[in-house]
Image (cartoon, rainbow, N blue to C red):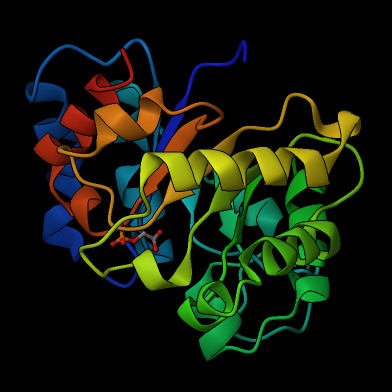
Length: 241
Ligand code: PGA
């Protein structure tokens, strides 16, 4: 894979204005990690506040969701176009917390990804099986179906494999299991999506990052809880090289 691995932090519903100094702390953790591209996805209201300092620290800006609609009467939604206008490069779509809590279907996730692409953003499309699906031996089938139904045609996007049972659980998938699922995802994507990065997410810490990034087919990481700590995300990014 020719592209640098992508290390993306997902703050979820955490952070206040006082945390906007994260970028400065990241920059003082050490020299900018060169082997990886780093992105941070804070909550919407912090995007405008953090964009410049993140750029100065060499960290790309990302959002956690976008509307499937371009603009108009959609109260509470945020358009991909506004995210691009604010300087975002990435947007997470279809995170399992949104699929579950907001009943987001694969079809809606695909439309969000298409809206992101139309605005010039790189959507990070999340997929992943529940513990029940894994225990029943259906993990690969569930993930393949999510990929097939949530992806736009062509490329230009990234996929994050986030097994639901590993998110916020303190128990990540093993690198071998992640590798196997990533190969399966790449197969499901087909030749059309050759340049697509497939990230792993779920309880990533600086301790497991080196093994995970060394695993075959793991093109980066989507980091939740650990990304709140600038030093931890810096160490995770350092593990790429
Ligand atoms: P976690 O979250 O790293 O806190 O497990 C990952 C995610 O949900 O993106």
